[in-house]
Amino acid sequence: MAAALAGDDLDAALELGLMELPDCEDCLRASGFTFDGIAALRAARDARLLAWAARERHHARAERLQQRAQARREASAAPSVPDPEAPALPASAADALARALAKARAR
Image (cartoon, rainbow, N blue to C red):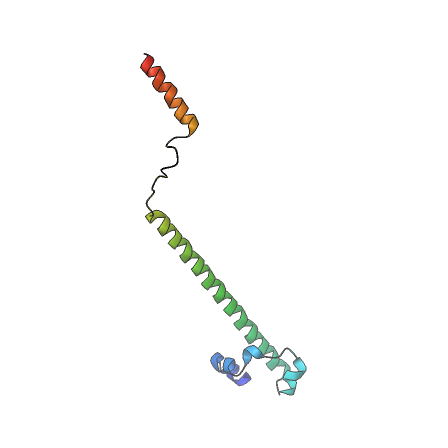
């Protein structure tokens, strides 16, 4: 795994178990890793975790933007059909109009 990372072969390091790296430093040293090698492995693992998290955030944002755009398209495409049960004017406006018409007829 360390050789794969040293050779800049991240795919091979991942296949060899980079992401399943144990946190126990004694376990790693018992497997033959040096202190510097352990630090490099952890740094590579942490960088990959950060990159994957950023990728997930990017995908989630892209999905949200796509849903918002779809909702806007649907809202703009939907015909606005007036509700037949709803009054054409608010009650106060209808009263004001009726008074104005009555006043105009009285003249």
